[in-house]
Image 1 (cartoon, one colour):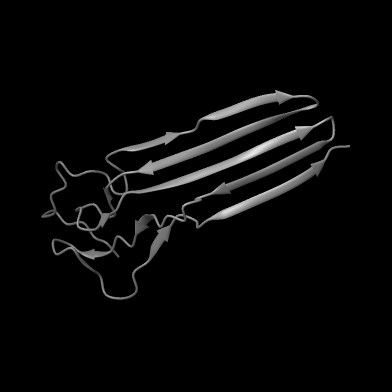
Image 2 (image 1 turned 30 degrees about the vertical axis):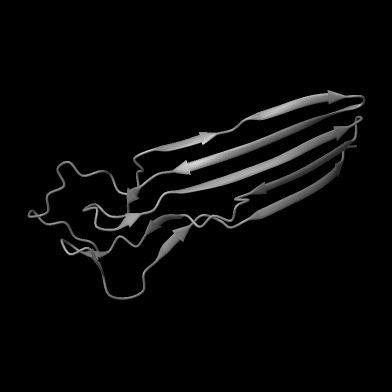
Length: 130
């Protein structure tokens, strides 16, 4: 368990797991054709450098994730969706076990736990609307 003592100085330190810079860009394009429409979309997330603990001893590396997809409708009933998340299969750690020996930056004994972003995932969906 992490304990804070009076000797620990957090003045000027950044909040744990809060990146220096984070952005999300989500362009999309929609086109009409004949009896249907098509929509193309993508999303690029970037999460910058940050720390896992309050004393900033465990640095977390920046990462990005690219997602994209296409959705098409035909007539009044048919809909096709193909989308993918983390298409580059980027490994991004969102947080690490914050238990460190204060002042040393050395992880506490025992297993180290980390939470990563999900790996590549693709969804294909064909729907008929009644």
